[in-house]
Length: 59
Image 1 (cartoon, rainbow, N blue to C red):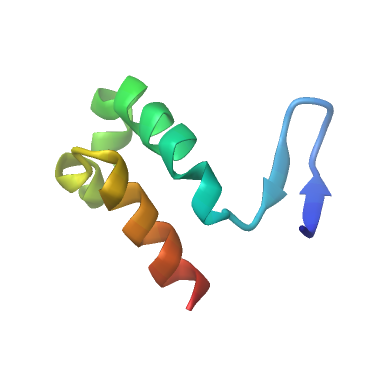
Image 2 (cartoon, rainbow, N blue to C red):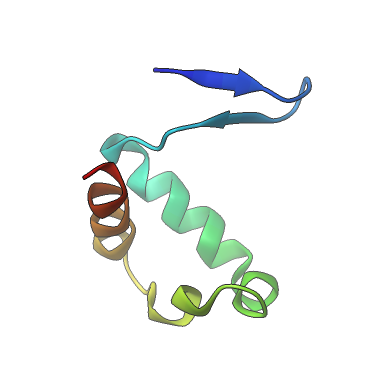
């Protein structure tokens, strides 16, 4: 899938459904910090929420 290499550590790309668990784990591990800026964080409490987010973003 298309991606843009920002630097050796960062690549911007379109999320895929298969990455829902990884996205959820990242949000969960950084919940306090991300919650200060992103209102959806408090409602993202399971992997299926991340999967639904990815699906809606791809529509």
